[in-house]
Length: 93
Image (cartoon, one colour):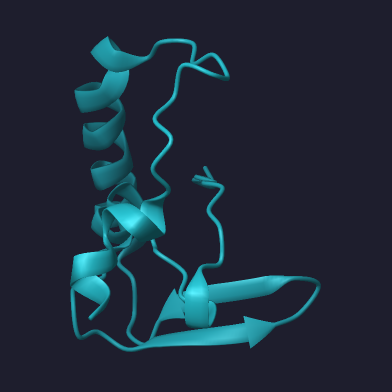
């Protein structure tokens, strides 16, 4: 079974892209890890190491179980007005 997880994010000042925590945790990317950015039919970002697919599946299942109680429908206008880049701006400097 192929596991898929997509998250929409924005490119910030200086081209920064924040990889959301749930994605980093799912594939085991930690601060300081190197990633490879490939341009194909789109852009692919992947760790520069082998990924244990069974471990990845286990992490996806565990994450889904943790967030299931919070699975609520979000409505536009009720979300915070602070973007991810501003929220984490301190970490970028």
